[in-house]
Every structure is written in structure tokens, then in C-alpha cells.
Image (cartoon, rainbow, N blue to C red; front, top):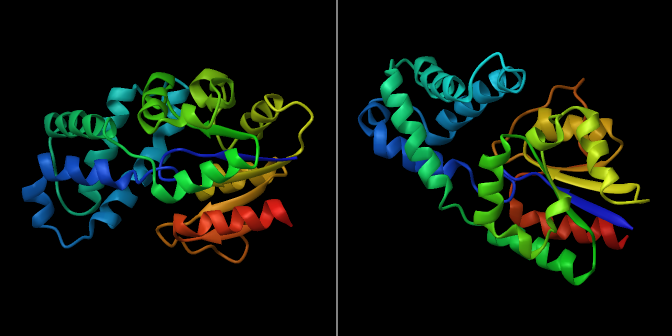
Amino acid sequence: MTVVIFDVDDTLYQQIEPFRLAIEDVFLTEYKQMNVEISELYLSFRQFSDEVFMKTVNGQMTLADMRVYRIKETFFKHGRKVTDLACQLFQERYYHYQGCIELSSSMREVLDYLRKKDIPIGILTNGPTTHQKRKLEQLGLHQWVVSTKMLISESIGVSKPEVTAFRKVQEQFDGENNFIYVGDSYHHDVLGALSAGWQVIWLNKYNRVLLNEESKPDVELHEDTQVLKIIKKLIEK
């Protein structure tokens, strides 16, 4: 039987929304003076976050320092200097709005379809356990996924894209060997799942262009409205 595993951030919900709201709360003046779209600012934020993620995992950087660093460097990249205090305030507002996230209606349809078909479902997400659990609860994912099938990197001791993270997921589904992973990050999701021998649906929402030598996912999509059609095709073929 096929098993479908999902990433969380920017896969099951739009992570750019709490980011946008926090920017408007704290840095609206600076943002209005910049000639940059919110999506471009957000991608820079994701870039700097990913850049130092492993340092937080390895204890080389505290979470608090990482959270200041990523937004401070984002503004510096686009020609603005902001204070550590303002960055801390931004993080407080960002955290607040993450408590208001909602499951994408398109992904809800996918989860409902899988449940109706009795297809096993799981979650594999990077991040601190408490922080990610809060998101899982806010999204109401326990309606579709049992707790033991929701794996968070801090809890399992290994992060995507390490193949061990994906193997730990497989251990939760005894005897199953046909896995589909749905995620938005090329580095963490696509490369990690491919290394584990899984099929991959890449939600390339921000149109990252792959180089010829880079590994290709099984399916590349640009909107989550397309996921259900592809899932049906992969499962029912």
C-alpha cells in the first residue's frame, strides 16, 4: 500500500501569511521604503533561516539568536539595517500569527481523500518539538494523522534532508515500502526523500529554477490546488 507523508510549513499552510502580518506590525515603514515584493523578502528570510538551522540543532547557535539573525540579515540583504530589539519584536508577532494559521483548503481536500481511501498518512517536519506541535494542533491534523505518525526533527534526533529522518518515518509504517512525500523545500524535502527512495511531489510555490545537474522530483507543482489530482493519479495507477 502507498503511504503519503507531508511536510508542514509552506506545504499544509501558507507560511508567508504570518510573516507578512508580522512585517506589517513591526517593519511597515521600512518595507514601504523598499522596492521589494513580500514574497522576495520572505524567500530571503527562509534562506537565512535554512542557512543556520543546523547550527541551532548542533547547539552552535541559540534559537533566540537564530531568530534575530534571519530577519536582521533579510533586511540587510535588501539595503536596510534594523535593530536586534526590533527583530525580537518581529519574532514575537510572527509567533503570535503562527498561532492563527489555517490548513489550506486544497490540502484539506487531499487529506479527506486519503482518509476516505484508507491511505496511511504521516508528517515529517523540521524544527523544535514544542513549536511544531503547536502548529500541528492549530492546523487540526489529529483529525487525519495519529500522533505516532507525526515526526518532528528535534524529537527524533535527526533533521531533513538526512536519510535517517525518512527511515524513522518508515519504521512507523511496518512493512510498507511505497512512500510519497509532499513538501516545498528542494533541499530538505526533495533531496531527502529522493535519497530515501521515495516518490516526491515538490510544491515549488516560488518558482525556484533547477540547474541541469540538480536531481529532479517525480512531480513539480506550483500551486497546492494541483496536489489532489496528482495524488489520485499516483495512487490509483
